Amino acid sequence: MTVMYEEALQRYEPVFGLETHVELGTRTKMFCGCAAVFGGEPNAQVCPVCLGLPGSLPVVNRVAIEYTIRIGLALNCSIASWCRFARKNYFYPDMPKNFQISQYDEPLCTEGYLDVLVGGKTVRVGIERVHLEEDTGKSLHVGSATGRIHGAEYSLVDYNRAGIPLVEIVTKPVPGTGYLAPEVAKAYVTELRDVLRTLGVSDVRMEEGSLRCDVNTSLSARGSGAWGTRTETKNVNSLRSVERAVRSEIERQAAVLDAGERVIQETRHFHEESGVTTSGRSKEEAQDYRYFPEPDLVPVAPPREWVEQIRASLPELPSARRARLIESWSVSELDYEALRNAGALDVVEQTVASGAAPADARKWWLGELARRANDSGVEVSALPITPVQVARVAELVASGALNDRLARQVIEGVLDGEGSPDEVVKARGLAVVSDEAALLAAIDEAIAASPDVAARIRDGKTAAAGVLVGAVMKATRGKADASRVRELIMDRLG
Ligand SMILES: [Zn+2]
Image 1 (cartoon, rainbow, N blue to C red):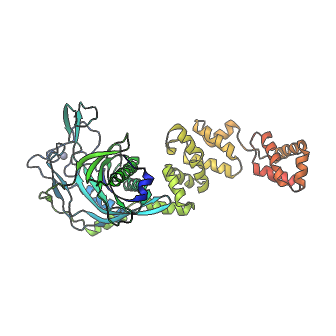
Image 2 (cartoon, rainbow, N blue to C red; image 1 turned 60 degrees about the vertical axis):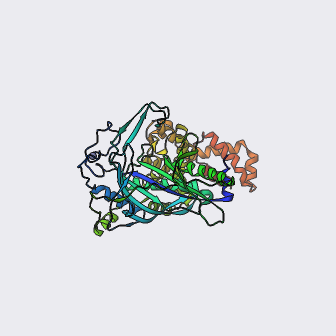
Image 3 (cartoon, rainbow, N blue to C red; image 1 turned 30 degrees about the vertical axis):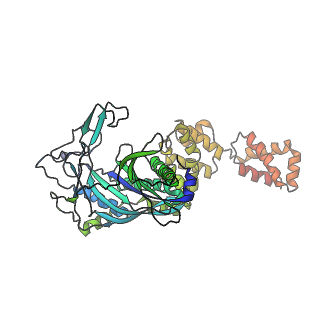
């Protein structure tokens, strides 16, 4: 029995936190020279170090340290001047050494934040730590319907992924977002993904597992001041699933608490098809990983000058870009979110750079072009029209050579592969009738056909002019500039 979301929020306050794992896009693995690329033949990218063979010794990948510092700086963290790797001991078939080299009480980056925009408001998500570790291999269970170990005939292990540098980004608990908690969680992962992509440290593909999230959720009774027991939902593999996982846990935990029971601290699995979580392993007794400093590696002590060099080389981050574009386009934060959610930021920015007014660029990409992208099930940026061409259409409208209706036909022609906007205008004969003599002739005809309307306009009832404008537009088959026609009619009738 679950409780409706709105109902649950009346009685309980949700708190969530996120642990995000990011595979770094380094050329080689974390502690050896094996290639760190996705999709190779199973077990073709391995060596004694990443297979954990006796006598092999790890060496730290300098680029992975640099990338982690880039991430830490972008998330406003302090960078440790000295820290160590630690062994995390546990046993799992996809982990050849039976321990994972990670960081424990001495992470490389600590105490930062990331600001995210939700519903036009900024929410600051605290970052507790960013640390570096190595990824595990991958088990493949053969013969079971679900691809899980249950019911499988046998299992295979691929160690290509073992030893790929993995960064873990842990937020602080995020309280106080109430009803918006699922949306804020999703917005955080979206913003984090954009930051990582901008930094060029990972290809951040959730579907290929290079960005993976675990979502912690708890509820407390409103006004109680005490925090509830949290559950950890593992490997939530799409942005939409982040939102759904938080929402589903809020509903489930509310039902448990309503029944007078207690929420069990456990790992849960999110199911993409049903949108609900099911119980996994209990975490009531904390697992003892027997962490200790990794004896085969020297400590990491990044020099201050190096950290400052990295800071100086950071690209413009999504938050800075947001502030810059909101200012220069004079749009609200809500308008900006709409552009971002439509995947239209880059194309609008390029259209403006090609000479269009920001309002025009937004109008075409979010209106006509978003509609056509939606119809054909593609991103706006994938439409066969360039920002330069959209800017040209906007220019033709601004100069009065096209009206909006004709401009839509020009866009249709470009999308249908009929050539550039100018070629479509020429081939389809779409230019506005700007020949004043031709317009005046059409206006005189319209006046002659409706003398009563003309008389009313002469008496000051200017609203009646719409009838004459309509008649002229009809006579020119929509190719006149309606506002110019109105002006000419008013002149004609004094
Ligand atoms: Zn290797």
